[in-house]
Length: 255
Image 1 (cartoon, rainbow, N blue to C red):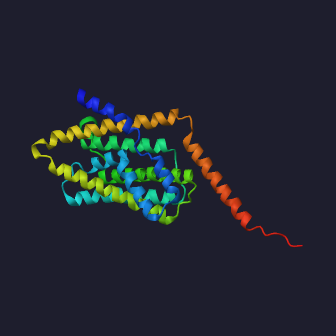
Image 2: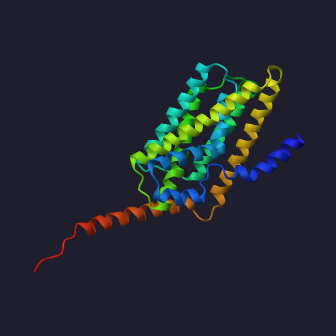
Image 3: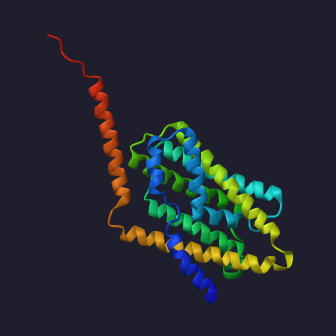
């Protein structure tokens, strides 16, 4: 147990970086092609620890390929819906709160894998496919929120092609994570699987709790009011764009 706590304490600084976007990527996205957005989406998914933890929770106990396809399809369709349409229509929310819900999804999946509903509440867990779909919507919304914040920071007006390209990149990153997790689970010896599964899912619960605390702490203590600044920046960008259009339509008077 001491070793586990030491490991988690070392991970806290890295857990805090979950779902972030490097400054170099933000600068690069200011003048990027559709192919570049595919790369950005893939790397963001691969470095999004909260997304990865949730995916691990989904596939950990699945050995049937049809079950894997069913759950991953539900998650993929859900996060594609919110990622594409929330970005396209400029729907956003405070990033800390969205990421807090994503952290809760990690806790929920680990708890459900540990059969927590039956052990502690003497009831069956809610329909798993439905819950994966609901949390998938939240994960997609989190991706959309970050993408929109980066777009405003760089002054980029995202096109449909760029949004879809970013989403395709996210899918590539997700596939890479799923393949790796699936191969690892296949390498675990049958006699050790139950012990490793229990340990791993407790790690999910603890890591998700740390992520949740971090995001809520950020929401209540962030003095920069990042989300407010984001909205103001978007309004300023739209206002400048509007004035630019009006200026283009003003013709000099002839005498």
